[in-house]
Image (cartoon, rainbow, N blue to C red; front, side, top):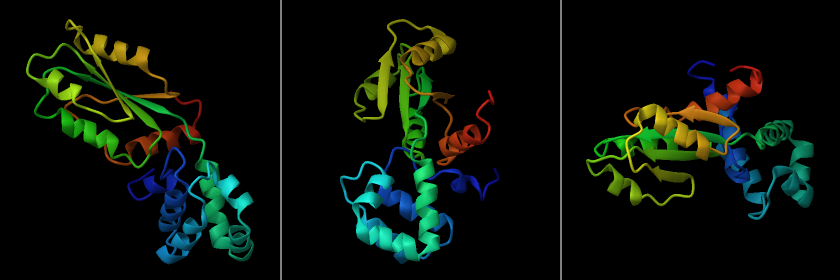
Length: 193
């Protein structure tokens, strides 16, 4: 996809309609004020962009008179139903660095993911650190005996609900666009493995 094109693949996951309009407008070089005006018209309770457009005469007027905004909304509607990605992170004795790895997942530009952290019976305080995590996208599973990296990954896989699976070791980081690139790649090449 190239360094400059990753953001064109997808800029959001679970619908955040206002942010989606602003993000796509920014990707296509549209003035912020233009996309922000449309995003402000989207009702807070809209579950989909189609629902927002259907409910607002003012949005329909903008789309009928502005082909650029119509393109932005069309792209956003096509990207709404992207798959859940399960990110599985095996952890063993990484109390000093694991939070960096976790943060790299939580700061993804693609939001439709779950992070499954499997603590493989750490002995250095990692377990206590992980017990403090309270985030709706994070599930922490604790082994009561060390099953090594493959065992931790298998445990994570059993817990996964995603259509796509990604692994991240606890001493590595994701680029903030990584999951977006994965979803973009699979939307273009759905039979890839």
